[in-house]
Length: 241
Ligand SMILES: Nc1ncnc2c1ncn2[C@@H]1O[C@H](COP(=O)(O)OP(=O)(O)OP(=O)(O)O)[C@@H](O)[C@H]1O
Image (cartoon, rainbow, N blue to C red):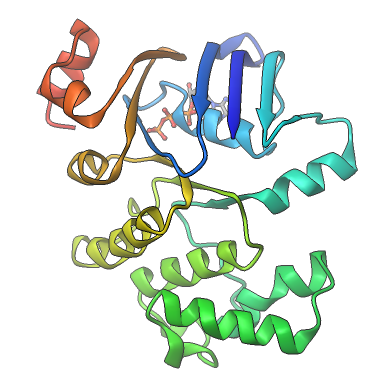
């Protein structure tokens, strides 16, 4: 589904990704963990073309990522959904309109169909009754669930989640993780940058530990958390991150 080889990314003279190799299979749930600044978010943003990279190859669903091909990038963004730490809902649109927006604008889906889909997706994240609410009438956890419904509205093959609970009050974290877990159970290919170690352990097929711009250690949650091999991962886990 995703094949990353020798990926290098620099911001000026700061090389943030120093040769990343990673393959992600269909329906796989992969968590990316690591210290702040290790390149986790940058890697995720490269996968959906939000960031350009200087060296290496990145293939999504058999298509090599080509930053200079606008048509191919549009196609990629349809296939790869992304949810961020901040929910980024359009504040002047109702919840339902937020979910309907991309399908009607980007794929010219008829409004009736987009509405039906939005209703179905809002029900799926437990917010059926909020279709006509405005985003600022919702809690952070509810807004993040709308953001998930909005990403799903494009029917992506892969969903990238970048620290989706980091901006939430602790009591709202669970409801969002529950939705993410249900997507994992339903076979969605998920790549998540997360600081929620217990959650990563519970839902991931594989966990990737990034350190200084490289995949430093990768394995099943049992292996990675149970018997970390490298001193860097041992130290990271030991610090209780
Ligand atoms: N737009 C940018 N311009 C310049 N440098 C950047 C930019 N985005 C990220 N960086 C740098 O790239 C490095 C990796 O950042 P990245 O956000 O990928 O790390 P991270 O592992 O996701 O960290 P965190 O857990 O804090 O989010 C950092 O040194 C950061 O300062």
